[in-house]
Every structure is written in C-alpha cells, then in structure tokens.
Length: 411
Image 1 (cartoon, rainbow, N blue to C red):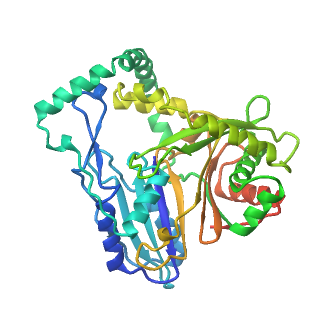
Image 2: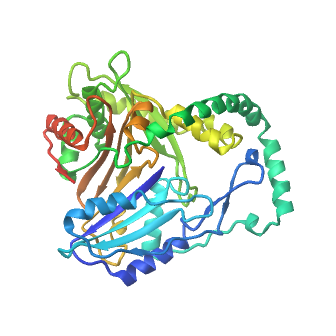
C-alpha cells in the first residue's frame, strides 16, 4: 500500500528548489526505513540507515501523456526494508505545464504523516531521526530480539494456529498466481472529481450535514447503486480516523469507525442523522487501542501475514471513505511558489488484475481533501458486473453528485 501526492503546474518547476525539497524530505519524517528483526516474532524495527532514490527528472512529454506518466510513477518499486521507501519525480509537458509526483510507502507514513512531512520540508524543518539500535552489534540485536519475542509470547501462541491455517491458504493461493496476473495492463478504475469548496460546504449545510458527512453519503449512494451492500441492502462504510497528536512522529496513527447507511428508499435528503451517528462512532473511537491483528502480525512470518491481510481485505460489501480535511496551504509550495493544485490518492499495487480484485470482493474507496478552494474526491472502484471501468465510475460519480445539485470537473 502506498500514497501518491501529485502537484500540477501551469509553469515549469524550479528544479533547484525542488532538489532542496527532496533533501529536506530525507532529513525529516521520511528519513527512515524498516530494518528486519533477526527473530521475526520480535517485530521489525525502525532504522535511519536508509537508501534514498535520487530526484527523478524525466524528459518533456506530450500533455496528453501526463496521466500515464502519473500512473507510471505509482507503479515504481518501493522497498520499506532498507529503502528507497519513497520517490520524488518531476516532468515537463510540451505545452509548458509540469507535474511532480511524491510516491511513498504507507508503512513509513499515513496520509497525515505524509502531509506533515511535506509541510515540514517546505519550511526546511529538519530533525534527523536517531535510533540507538542502528549502533548495536549483531549479538546485542539478537538479545533485544529474544527479549521482545518473549514479551509477545501470547500473540505468538495465537499466531501458531493462525499460521498453520494461512500456510494452507498460501499454498492454495500459489496455484492461482498465474491466472491472477494475466492482465498486466489492467489499471484499477480511478476518477478524480473536483468541486468548488464553497458549493460543497453549502450543499452539506443545506441538508444538516458536514463536508465529511456529504462525502460519506455520496459514497454510500454509489455503493448502493452498484449493489455493494449487505444482505439487507445496507451500504457498509469504514472510515479511517487519525489518532495523531501534536508533534506525533508515528508513521501510522490510525483507528477506524464503521457504520451502515440505508439508502434503499433513495438518496439522503437529511444528513443530520448520519452526522449524529458518525459523531457517536468518533467519540467511541477516541478510546480505541491497537486492533487485535497488530500483535499477531509481528508474530507471523511476513509471507503468511500477507496472506492474512488478503483474507481480511476480501469483502464485497465494505466501502472505505478517508477524509483529510483542509490541507495546509504550504503544501502547494514545494518549489517555492504555489502549484495550481495538489492531489493525494491511495495506491495498492497488489490490485493489478481483474482476477485479484474479483477474488478480494472488488474495491470502492475515496480519499477526500480540500485545497486551494476545491474539494477533491479521488475515487477507486471495481465491482463487477456493475462497475468495471473508469468510464462507468465517472458516470456514477457525476450522477450521484447531481442528486445533491453538484457537478464536478473530472480529471
């Protein structure tokens, strides 16, 4: 899983200033990678001994190929173990426009952490991360791993039985790998819809909701229309919730809430009940601890844990709605002057074929953010047979937005 931020310009990018930004990123939150534990049950550790990819400057391309260039940057290899765990690239179009892509592993930064890393690098705020274990010898590291593995004994016992089940599943999965990789040119249908922020907020207020409630209602309507619902016809929504605090440098600081939205009688004209439900769920989430999957994860061999993740993620009814709110205006100025816009989106490189997506129950996800006076919804969707390509997804998004008297510019 990775996050991609894309800046678009109606001018050339200042390459010298962008190189300074690239250097600043290396000396901030993104200046670390994962180091593998000597004993898997001990859990991996952070390390500042990282390999970083150089700033990638590509030759000028035709304007019509910009979306392809962006998509290709999202297929670049990222290595959380040792690095490079993120990549910064820039290109210029033949009409004078240009674009920058920052592609980062979700392991080293969730969306809010990535935004913080960007704003800190813009301000040239550097705080080289230090990890004492980087200076430990092999024997001391082994001792630390033995100690940490012992502390996780309970999780390890649970992992033994789970690992056996996953090993069987892994053998079964291996048989289908060739079939899953048939469509090498497949791309998860994605649509970027932009609405004037003033109109979005007005539409939400007029119906007793908030900007977030409206985004949830829109996604629930899309889910209902394509049949991505439970047996009762209810849309099941899951929303990541940030638990990040001031000066919090955790890579991922997330909880989640889930709830159901009933649109069997049509679009929600009153968003107040949904808003109240979400507030109640958010209050409950404030006291959440790490989900039980986490302690088991560190005790499982990595290959088996990947199988577990695939099994857990296989759900044909859940729709994920992630909202970043209003972005810091400083995020626009990574080369010293504001870009025309910045967009963020989630990239899952494992969803690379129709067979894989179908096996996992399809996909419906949106990341919502506000920047430069615009609300942007970056929607990923695949739910056969009703939703299988970007054209269908674009029509769905526009149709549902129209029910709230909104129209979007699609990109």
